[in-house]
Length: 262
Ligand SMILES: Nc1nc2c(c(=O)[nH]1)N[C@H]1C(S)=C(S)[C@@H](COP(=O)(O)O)O[C@H]1N2
Ligand SMILES: [Mo]
Image (cartoon, rainbow, N blue to C red; front, side, top):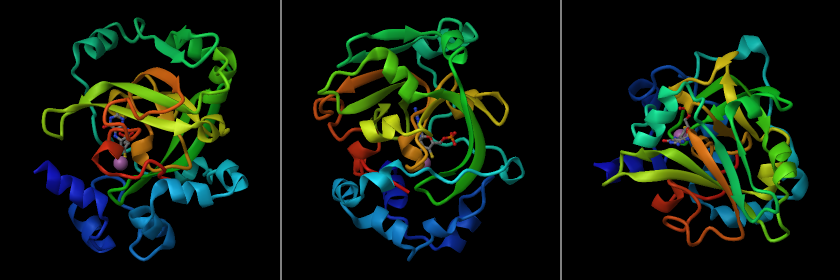
């Protein structure tokens, strides 16, 4: 069953009309870049992600994702993947109204830190209205508010050999045999990108549990699966080959590209 699901998700073969008719609930717009035949989507489906990344210039990697106006916010933000984590750890933190929540940042840093939600909310914030593209073929436009990851990195002082940020999440994703912890990773270029934020707010309210409360990553030049929800820890590493399946993320361990640029 899950094999079928992964296949369907991975090989984006259904026609746009078929996808719209069968699987979309809220965000029912298929954007041009996700249509079959569009070069971005073809690249996503075929190219080796790391090759694709290597071919991109630094200027391209640093370019901003398009931002939208309030009137373009579409249909709320359709929750996808885990929407209600039930680990004991998460339930306790949620039960406390997230007052027990701490974000740990550690690994290859000179000054490891732990932040409460209050700490994070009291740092300079960034708000952006962006489009979220899921590999399943749907997209939403929502407003996100949070702390730029670059500000947190400045505080923890990454060492010279830190190449990736690994995001560990509270949820055990249940749609694969036995379930597996959700995690993700991005390189330092994406981590330092001005639109890369750890969001605690969505569409002007607190981030809902279904969308990753209390804190989720927004990395706007990438596909939806890179945007880890329910983040509890960020580890700076030189390599992710020893972490979980070794491919740098939950879906990557099932064959998705690590570099999922849009
Ligand atoms: N922790 C965690 N993060 C996750 C997922 C998940 O299942 N667990 N799903 C990913 C996928 S595939 C998408 S499209 C987005 C969905 O975000 P949303 O629920 O806010 O729409 O979260 C991503 N981050
Ligand atoms: Mo997704």
